[in-house]
Length: 347
Image (spheres, rainbow, N blue to C red):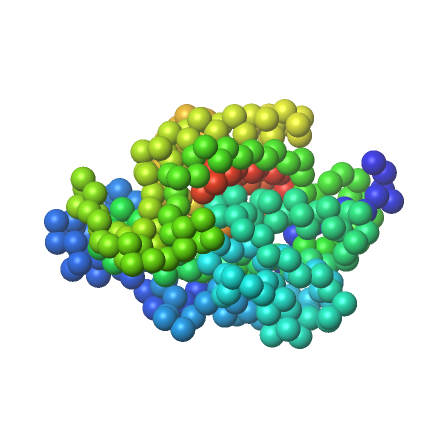
C-alpha cells in the first residue's frame, strides 16, 4: 500500500450509562451469604449501572452518540452508515439501527444495520466499518454497541447479577486525512466462532426456536442456589472460563503473527472486560505486563460489547494512549465468538 491508500481509523469514542446503579452493598442485602469484600475479590467490580424499566438500548445508544457529536468535530449529517451491535434490541423488528438513525437525524441516504453479537461485537464492528470505508462505500461510520443484559437476569441469580452492567458506546470511524499515514490504522483481524458452546451462555426461551410459554416462567434452582427461568440469562461459568483460556491466547498469537509484531511492540492490551478472575488468568497465561494490561470494569461491570470502547475511552483519559500507540483489542464470549485486531491510536 502507498500514501494514497484509503485507511479507516477510529476518530472518537464516547459512552453512556443508565442513572440507576447496583453496588456490592446492595447485592449483599439480597445475598446475605456474600460479603462486599467477597464480591469485589471474585469479580473486581464495585458498581454496575442498570437500565430503568422503560430504558432500552436505543435510548442508551442515542445518548452515547449525542455525546460523541457534542464533544467531537462530527455531526449527524456527516454519518453515512450506522452499525448497531446488540443482543437486546428494542424490537424483534424493525432494526434498532434504523430507529436510531431517525432519532439522531442522520440522513436517510445512510445505511443502517443491526448485528447480533456480544462480547466480541466491537471488534467485529470495527471490521465491518473498515470494509465499508476502505472500499469507498462510506466516509464516516457510527458504530454503536449497546446492551441491557440486566433485563434478562433473574434477580435471584447471583452468578450473573454480580457481573453484568448496562451501557452503550458510540465510536466514530472515518477515513484518515493524514497524508503521512502509510499503513492501516485498523487491522489485521483474527476471527473465530464455535457454536458448539452456544448453550453455555444463552437465554433458552424467547426466540423462534422456543417461544415463551407457561413452562418458560417456571423458576428453577441450580446446585449453587442460583434461581432463574428459561427466559432468563444462563451462564455456565466453568465452560466459559475454559473456552476463554483456550481461545484467547491463540487468537492473540495469530494476530501478532499477521501483524508482524512482537508482544514487546504492543503499547497497550485492551481485552473484553469480563471480570477480574478471568482477566488475571489470561494476563498471567499470556505473560502481559500489568502496566500494559488495561482494566476498566471496576465502576461499570461487564457491559458486554461496550467493554472495549469504554476501555479505550478510560485509557485515553488516564494518559495511556498517545498518537501512534499500538493497541491490541481482543473480544470473546457468547456464541462462542471471538475476534482480535490491532489499532493505531490517532492524534
